[in-house]
Length: 230
Length: 196
Figure 1 (cartoon, each protein chain N blue to C red):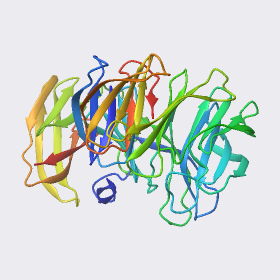
Figure 2: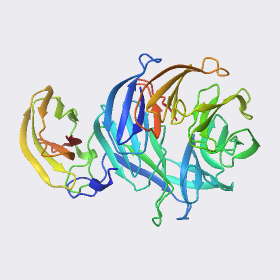
Figure 3: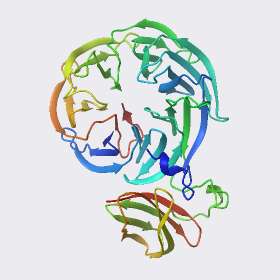
């Protein structure tokens, strides 16, 4: 952490970064675990203690960039460990691990449509354009699931592939390089390179020495303004 | 490029050969989550750090939010914050990275909007050296501080136009900060350095 030196007298505590806006639900016993944004609207997953991967509440906020105002327009209690990772895809919001689909046609009030199949706590996600890819621990540290969904019907994600995977290959964050490469950072200090040309039949192409335990992965292009991150 | 955070380092891999990524850079950074946009890496945990040139700290904000997520969307960075039980802590922070021009909130220092129009000086640290890329020959004041704020080195430098470097001998292991200031404009750059 950088905190220890940030307050030293010589060093400007903050520089080159401007705080534009903040928002709080007013409850010091809760915190946010994930955020999604879509055209002036912000969707927050709010958790109670112990502030881990999954939370309890979905909030929608209107963000007016001109005056830095954030206004709560929607709040829904979902229960313990129902909302962690979220993905916005067009007019739809997918909530993991509960597997809830919301219609965002009215962005101020997400409209719950249905549930789809998921597993336990999700820890990573990815949107490939053809499907959502994410993995999740299922019961024990060593057994993980990989789910791949088709978004042919975006209002109803359909599982097209799922498997228990070796945590040596799948466990950490993931990144997707269109049109077909998936990179999974693993707990055995490697990067698994997977061919998703046929998402119903992922193929492990390569496994290369990687970093130590990875908590986040991201993918970007030097010249492209569109990052793909997980 | 793909990047990943692990044990106080960001690992950056090239995807020129997408089936065989190879490590091109490690960046010392003790944060929890990274995201990237264009040439920049945003690293978050109890703070937000912005890296450019794959090793220079170009922006910093201490928000004490313990975030595990960061989302870049239309030039703003959205950071949900897991608070630590501190009162009145926000759940969401939205940040704007101001770019390459150094800005400080110290009142007696020129602000971003009052700096003269000058080509920027680029300044970074790598493998025991300070690097400069200057738009013209410049006179600089260099100061190096340790992590507690103690001054460990102070000297004047003349850097030529273009790229140049200077070996930096640090007294011991640890994190240091090098501050260079242009004598003519007062414009400053700060980078983190590591003594080994």
